Amino acid sequence: MVTVDTTVVVRLITNDSPRETKRAANLFSAKKVMLPTVVLLETEWVLRYGYRLAPAAIAKSLRNLLGLDNVFVPDPPQLDRTLLLYEAGFDFGDALHLATAARTSGLKTLDAGLVAKARSAGIRGVTLL
Image 1 (spheres, one colour):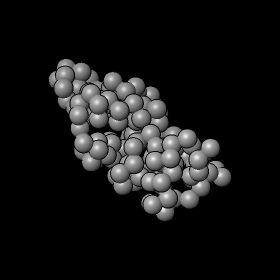
Image 2 (tube, rainbow, N blue to C red):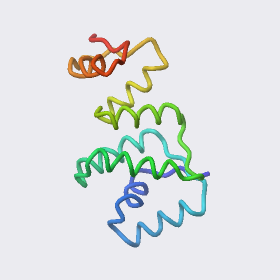
Image 3 (cartoon, one colour):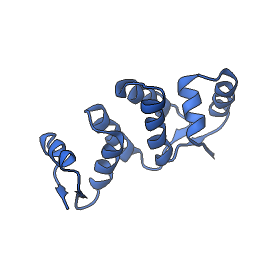
Image 4 (cartoon, rainbow, N blue to C red):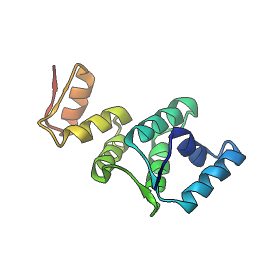
């Protein structure tokens, strides 16, 4: 198994550099690939801000990538919850925090907007610090 960084994932999704995309695709077809959570977080950010992709397109791309039999993530249930929250309109980083906090006693934040959004989505345990 090999771990990849954000550049490899972005090339694979965007196909904006044919030579690099081919190298990325060859790696994904030949090896088991580990995608660290931070790589997925960075990938979402690059695709949203650098490539101006809509969240729905990003979520679809990530789900397609994660659907490959040889692709692994450290915590599949956490990532699935993250993507569900992201698809429901949460910022990817916030969705990741909420998915992580689901396994703890809650999420403390200084972001009143996140608290309000979580409450209106029926998510408990998100409170202002």
